[in-house]
Length: 105
Image 1: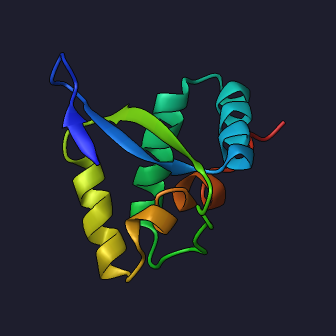
Image 2: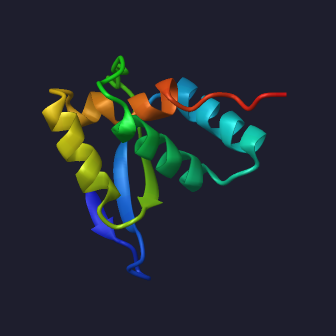
């Protein structure tokens, strides 16, 4: 689900994200020294650039998670997920889990 942000430079996106994955996202963002919003944006972009879908994440019982993405990014993700036959609800946490590595030390 998306809605335009007040400043209209980003779209608010609401999805489901399990607590363990939300915690991992916060840790990875801190390790990389970036905001969570930027981490989500990068992970979605990287996932879309993959040749195929990665494993989905079970979102049953997960809480809502919202962030702001550049205009069109969520729609692009939804289209690619559909092309890969991945539901948006199970596919939306996948980028955060599978393509965004911990920084090298």
